[in-house]
Image (cartoon, rainbow over all chains, first blue to last red; front, side, top):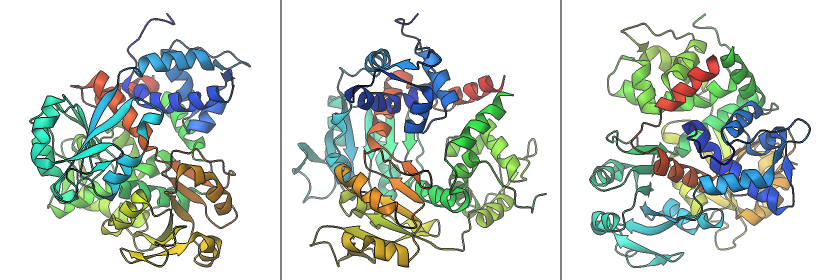
Length: 228
Length: 228
């Protein structure tokens, strides 16, 4: 049961990297076990959800003991496919694009931005953190040749849909959209939107109305409620 | 009931700006009503959650009709306190900080980055999108004088905790943390972590394992499950 690779729910799958990263830190600091309460505090996911997630991994916490850090790490490493490097392309080398290129993604995982694209002649042919910036004219050619499945979109909002329309005709299956634009795509393509304005507004609203309360408690309550 | 301002759950509160923004677009394009299925598709929140959220707003959708867009917009505008400008400070004017300063946050809401801080002498005193960059030495002085409650943290990871330790002594109640560092703060301060490496890894894992499936369907299933 514990070694069998089960198909885990998508909502759980999305939390895997978060758990993985935190457990790596724990392991490096010499901790052998961790309670769901500690994990909850650290990764900001309520402990009921953590316990349910972990049950899919065949990891059953023991009362007064918690979870075995090494076991979880081995499971996550295998599941997240840490040995296979996933090549990602980034489109739009402005400030945000440059920040992402300089961000050391590979420190914690095997996902790497390997190709960058821009329309600015002064940027084309330059390198940022070892990644060459190509002309947007070469987009389809390179994506298809390298079989890129995931792209990060950091172009100006007004260019987002036209670039997306081009991506639809490649092998790309996923777009991590950092632009404020909402993208129209066929159902074969998944878009994950990181909308910074919404993140900021939402957080400000939260602070103005719910400060001096932990961000977690009510999530738990809400979960309890939905379980009834 | 509909006009009464109810205290809504935090998890719902966090989704408000997302709904608000999408409904603004709908309203501008002349749409008078919207179904929870349409909303679900657009904002990527499952429709069961949308219906539950909206019930807190006193907005009850009618079968075959949907929700009244104007009513929802009025409610959101009032709730999100669109008339009161919230001033936010940004710490760390690197690529990501500059990208956030250039991002037109005020287009859709009344949250504005008004102060920026950095340690780089060549940046101090310059302006980016009308925001002056101050020396980090002036951090406490300006935050306290301007009664800033929310800051955006875009400093290098190794500086994140030391800057946070200084913020703890100001009136700041919320930190939007874009660094990879996990911050230690007292319970009086809320941290919202936007961890770009985790976002990317999680999305790549999702695409590799669940592509050609909609991102929504299983969330709904999981919600149904927890309700049993």
